[in-house]
Image (tube, rainbow, N blue to C red; front, top):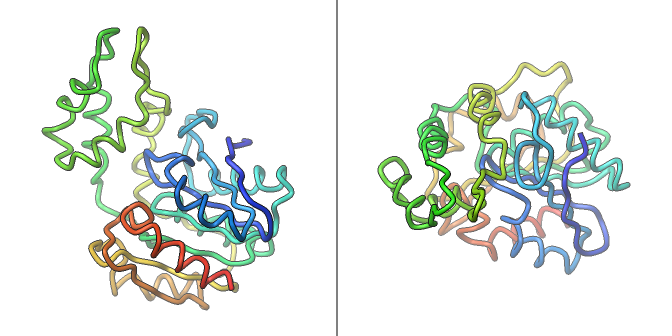
Length: 252
């Protein structure tokens, strides 16, 4: 599958992969800053943004989407950075095609199974009645009981097209059906990834825990770890300047 891609800048290629319910546009500020030095390609993963929809969302399948798209853009080998679900896709791509990934940056995720935290979000999104007169305020209120943080509600509602024929721009049904795969981590056939790898955690997030490090080091023997202050799980949004500095240092 060829993915929708937003490309900016010139120089060494750096690809960015968003997380669950995100899109390439979420990297707008970060991409613009990094494009001063690098050729930055931000991809919409399958069932997200402007990319095609598909019934399955396995990590090997999504990794192949990314590799196929970057080949088409003549952007391989490249540095690959992914956040959350996109970080798992990036890890899978690095293990499946290590020669194609010059270095790997994983933002606030580990190669482990996580609790089903997003299932309630998906159910609440599916429960919104898509009426022609639906307002953003009504949609926000419909999510409020389940999604308590206003910024997270706004993040989810970026995927809803309002107007005479309101509709989800993402493949919401496909995503909801695939959440068990998205929460997990597959058994991959490839060996460990030998290249440089940096795992970056937000100081206000618990997604990368000390007990995850043995698994990370088994798959990524050269892994290093960093934390980004003043940042939670969406660390590139919480502290874009700090995130860009971490990426730039890693690219040096």
